[in-house]
Amino acid sequence: MFVPVVITLSLLTFIGWYPLTRAIVVESQKRNIDLAEATDFEEIAGHGLAGIIAGKSVLCGSRRLLDKRTVDMSAATDISESQIEAGKSLIFIAIDVKLKGVIALSDSIKPAATIVIQRLREMGIAPVLVTGDRRAVAESVAEMIGLTEIEAEVLPAQKLQVVKKYQQQKELVGMVGDGINDASALAQADVGIAIGSGTDVAKETGDLILVSGDLFDIERCIKLGQQTLRKIKQNLFWAFFYNLLGISLAAGLFYPLFGLYLKPEFAGLAMAFSSVSVVTNSLLLRRIKKRLQEIG
Image (cartoon, rainbow, N blue to C red; front, top):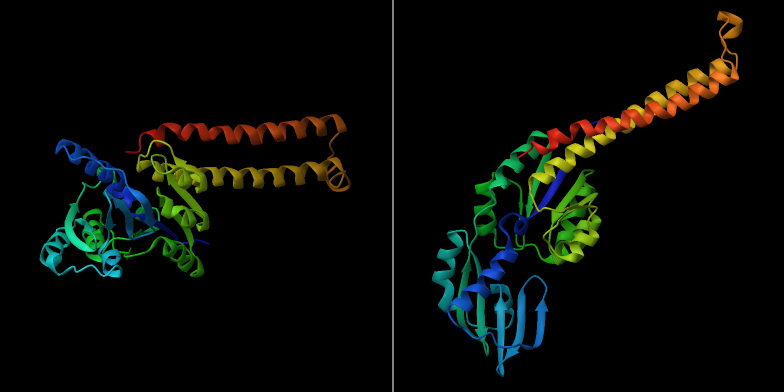
């Protein structure tokens, strides 16, 4: 029976949040901005960062974070809406509970993303975009890579619930992620696929690790898994058939009717041949190596 599979995809896997973070640091160095050390540093999961820099309280993160800390956001309304419509992610910065700046981030979609999404659909897999970003940004990215199913504004703890939701619908779920926030969802998924360039926590939690970070490896690993399962089923079928026939002959069940039987020495030889045939059939998996390498 065919069972549909849902692959949940972290938005950051496709647009690369960590390169964006590095880009901010590089740009600040180009502008000769001193990077002062923060004290009382706090990471607010799914929202941003807080800390003390040069004796001043600094907030850096999503609008939700600043709203919760009673920062007046009215001055950024127009610019934030225009940047969100352009598909950019926004980081708001407040110093001593006063809004001081907005950083608009954007990155080009990995060229492979659109092709991989299309091929997953052709394989009967329904991709779902899961992100903590604003729905407008998620919809913009989803449109570019050909996705229709979106779970936006999802907090880190809620990613686990998204995976559970699809599992409760009796679907097999694969989770592709690369961040600390993806770890629990990767563990819960039927198949957790971690990106090799991601965090150590994600890689330790995932069932599979895409070492190169190449998105085509998602397609490769699924096809390799399908071929491996096919070989297992073939080996089980022939092992049962072969042993059922061999044991019946060795026991003399066919001798009264057909005069057929199997001598002990030939039975031992047949048993050895059975093992060799199973191993040989498994080794035929090496033939698909070239086909997998051609994916791209």
